[in-house]
Image 1 (cartoon, rainbow, N blue to C red):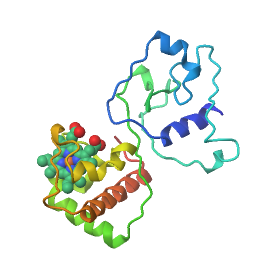
Image 2: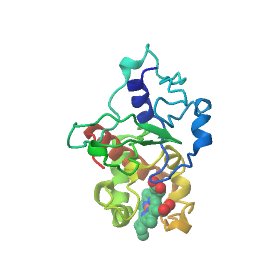
Image 3: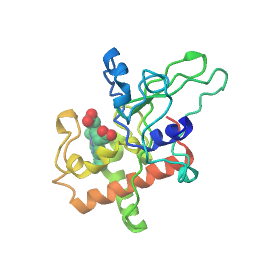
Image 4: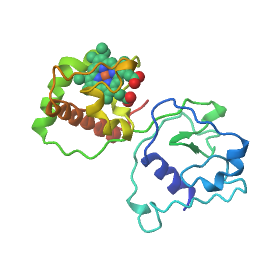
Length: 204
Ligand code: HEC
């Protein structure tokens, strides 16, 4: 698989939540050939083979890839670093070697709800979630921007919002206010906002 395909694939696969740094040491780099899902060093392996053993993207389906996310560096001068991927987070250096924090991609799951349900979710979101998570689900930075939830956080949505899975971290449960259907409707609205951001190539 070519690097460009890998780059696109890496943007499509599940990425870990914002800011989670990985432990990558010399031993791991030497053994990097054994980590199919990662691209830990220039050329991927210690021998710089520049080949990914992943098979999800192939010469048969590469034409179906679309833009999932982008970041505008403001210039293309010296923009030639090989992006590295460690445990679901992509790292790269921008122009003039300016380093950026890990940029999470958008992971919108498929939308299964109707327009009416999304509308209802939007109303519920505005009534309660907006206070902390921002107008139109665009966070000001104090709390997570729900559009950038990881694949795992999408799966945990009910547990987090209804049953307090993240209560210790400051996300109080809403089981006394909302039903599972209400929370699913809010989730549908957040997915809708995420898909809109992905279409617009939302900036960080
Ligand atoms: C009083 C403030 C507050 C309100 C209101 C609030 N949240 Fe949160 N929420 C937080 C905080 C703080 C976190 C970060 C918890 C953490 O660090 O894991 C969070 C995290 C989350 C997460 C995990 C996001 C991620 O990417 O890790 C989800 C999902 C979530 N909230 C959904 C909701 C929904 C849906 C509502 C409305 C029903 C809501 N929240 C209302 C404060 C709030």
